[in-house]
Length: 171
Image 1 (tube, helix red, strand yellow):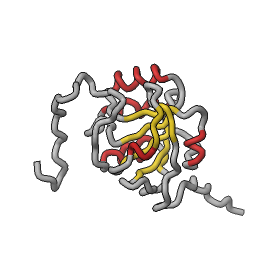
Image 2: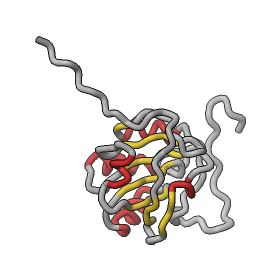
Image 3: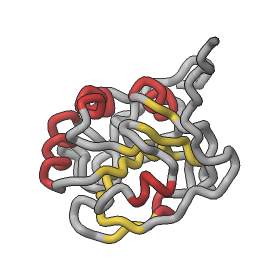
């Protein structure tokens, strides 16, 4: 008798509206999902205690946009996240869930996992599991800077370095 293959994680349906939430950012300011819409964004469920997330952390800062197209939903100590962001040059926003309430609503039962959301807040990818898949989604998403102050020394009014042109894109 053969054993059936393991069932793939069942995420939210493509095209469905992403579950809304309001969570504190690293400064304790309550932020809602709608603040991060208007452009495609990869929502990543993250934990600084997760070994796979620790391995992913430096790679976020190595993305062409340094992670600005990501929205990390994590939990834990804000200072721990600030240090990780500063160490690795993140440009992403980080929100802190109290337990796993947002992860559960998104059917993301592990870390790192997540989805590509379209500009209107609809699910635009299957549930992505693992750093490689999430970072590939982020690398193909348009970028804008995060708003948690992870500008690596850039101040308001300082022009950001231009992103390198992608193949087939005018420089």
